Image 1: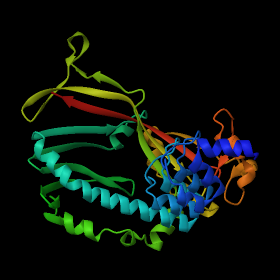
Image 2: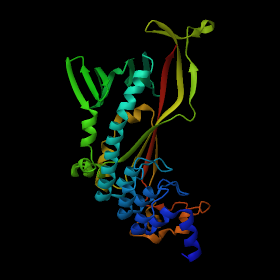
Image 3: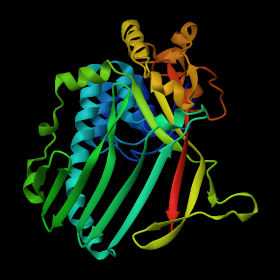
Image 4: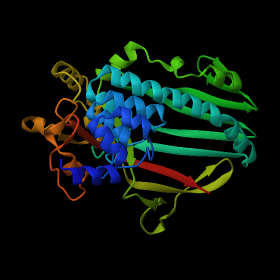
Length: 367
């Protein structure tokens, strides 16, 4: 890299440039704009993790780099850390994430309780279901009616769909009750069939004192589990969502479908063109682990109208991916130039990706 290019990159992307060089000592002295995004959609922390620069990662985390932020392709810092296959990297990022998660959650409880108390009391029902284009299979798909009550600073949620095991949807009657009172909160789970009640009580002030970075040290088993299981990202694709009012009756006598909820007549709408997208990455796994995961894939998944797409790693182009051991595969000028087409080249390990899309239809009774 010539001196002119180096000066330009230092001026435009100072932290990213230091991360690229893994100049962590200078990075320690000059940490600013820690969340700035480069032309490839990465923060300095995302870049450091993908390049495998542990020293730079430590510096950025100490200076408050956001560990839960997603890059331009929707992957979190922890997911990218797992993709490196480096246990120390995973431990470092996981520890910081868990610490921030716990401290942020506890710190927000008093404000949350205040907002719950101030909001109007209500009762609502939400019905959701999955459908399939294969006849009769829709009966096997999950569905549930979720009921929610709010009174003062207390919440109650009732649900009947509990999980999936051995090709069977597990159902039951559960109530989850949240009770808040200043610095004390209580979470109650009621198992109506077995008539069992589990209660957890929290003293917010004491819990906050006990949450430290050292206390969030992840167990070796947890790190190992993440490194031997796929990276999974699930989200609802609502880009083409459309709401349609449900009809009842036949021929020319069709009218708007209604349901009576808590004494009120409500019209029923269907939300169409909603897809559940499941993205799975496996580049950090061994061939044996990949084979095991493929064998364990849920048979029912193929019956639910799932569309699957594979994006395999470009085996012959592996050396074109910049890593800590191969930093010259892509030059800084190429990476930081938004007009330069990297094509199949990038940083980090070549991604092995499977994308599965499943159609979802949601019903909404609205008053």
